[in-house]
Length: 264
Image (cartoon, rainbow, N blue to C red):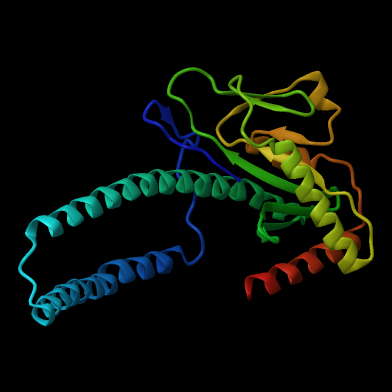
């Protein structure tokens, strides 16, 4: 997943907010309860504990008041906190953009359940994750979501030459093609070890809100690079690769793995 920064002259590529997830209201209530009803009551006594310790230190050492020294310390601490807050705010905005992109893609994929496909989200590996996995009789698809902010004006274009991706003329820091191929290789080994059966997952990179310009080279590539709106049609129109019981076996083993990992 790519969590793109969102400068002032850029905008989110997502036209609307993603639909809500099951239990999201409960998550919001828990978050609000922690931040509004619990944390402040720990902060307040902590502040007075620090004041009390300083008073006890002055009483024990018979030290005179030092307002200048403590004011300098307070100023430096404040400057550090402001800097950390600004960095954290940017990071949170980028994380939220990436989160919303994954939700939007996930909701496009949900329509595939109607044709019998199994859809998985956020499969955890060792130090990485697979954003989405779809298992269908037409194949196994590993989907990497790249949510980049886009310019306020003009049509945002993604081009793919079969090996490299260009986003409005610039290549991203990490090549998504290499990344998603590595994810497919990991999933292939995982399912082979679990089921004893060979499979060849299809690597897919999607860019929510971006126009993906097809090229002759991209059509012969093993990696699909698409706008997520087109992905369900690509999957549902693909030729069958597995029997229904084989697809069910792969999805069963992946589901078991995901449940074990989520319980750790």
